[in-house]
Image (tube, rainbow, N blue to C red; front, top):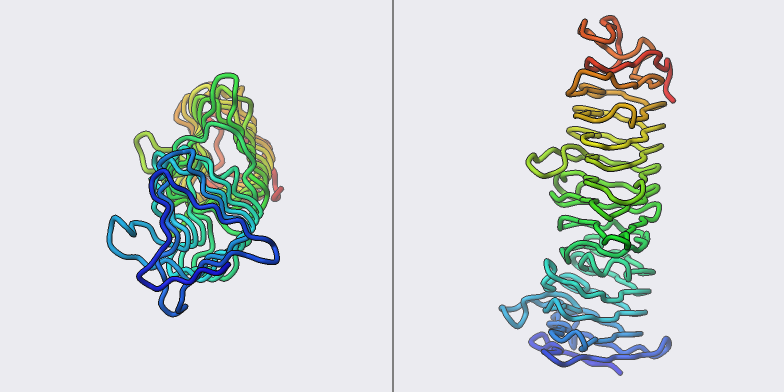
Length: 387
């Protein structure tokens, strides 16, 4: 079956209606423009009833995305969602040549609590983000291919807190986060997010908050900004097990102030292990406060304004060993005076150790050429070469 649309036409599933299009691997259903130089309006799903689940399997949707006047074309793309109660299934389809987004755009993402399924599709040659989803749909977004789209990435917009766990698959393109990403489960039902190695999470002036019953496990993942700075990640009032960041890159975070994270990684009354990771080009790399436990071993902390900053923590809960600090304006500073923080067995950017020109306790090292360090930090013995 092949359906051809003039540029003034589209296919609409209004309230309490749905579209079921089930093709075959060797006989796909095609929705496309009559004239590929004049894009049509695309398929629009206004599934206000959760029971109205539209399904597209083995379909091709191409050369759509023509944007006209609200409300009929408030969304743009080959396939566009209009209401936050709708669920759709998109499997084994080809999304090609949209003049805008491939799939998505006009969902009411801030309140979207539905879980749509987007799996094993090809997104090719679309003129913006090929796929736009809400946070609730990330766990069912798997096995897709993205080729030659103008903006390669999966755009994530709203959807509320992530309340149940899933594994975030590496699909070869970054997840561009255009909402505050919040991970928080329930008592007796942790929300554990496992992020596959190789993933990039790029935030648009937003934060990543792991709180309460949320648990994060990430290995080989990059957390960064997308076309602007971002506000970092915050582990707050954890009631879960220890979150882990292993072999990750955390970069380009700025401190916005107020309730937002006070560093690229802020740990407040939470437990976290950070190992073999790079924390670079941030206003503050790691910020610690409250009854927090930190295991910080084997990391590279480079070119931050402040590498680590500690406020009112219990020093006995902190293990900071075998790290490389280099090119930071200040590698380590604490806001309280006693007991001292043990930070020995680290490399401070030079064999001579950290630069400590202050005669405040517990040490003094004015002739050193390494990164500067504040008072009340015990840094001897230090490592004389990078880890």
